Length: 194
Image (cartoon, rainbow, N blue to C red; front, side, top):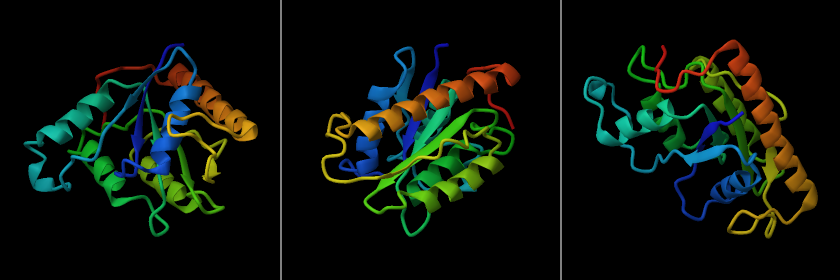
């Protein structure tokens, strides 16, 4: 099947190791996928007062999410949680009430850090948020990547064969998960659900 997969990178840093991981995932994705980055760096802070008149950056976020089949979250861990920028994007995308852009949209979560637990706590917190947003989640395999110097090149080439195989399998498992989800919940691109 052909899928358009949007990916959100939780870090705003241009030099983010999670951005480098995202490049690797794009390279390792099945060839029939269309991978689309969903930018979040220009979003203002979410404010419920703007629900009736979304700013252009937030409208662009919701429009992009409406045109992807699924969402891949690539997130760092800040103070045992997801970055505020990522939570802010989720808040914009899931509002206003009745127009949740994540409802019924399959998702997967991955992240990297220099530490051995590789964003495990942030990912668990993100899964809780996505559950509330009614996003069907791929729960396995879990992917907590310890980033070491040279593991992934700047252009996304994975230099460790075992890590490359694991990441390729992660993407293949995400494809199988999406296929299973869409057998039950047919794709409706452009439709926002509550």
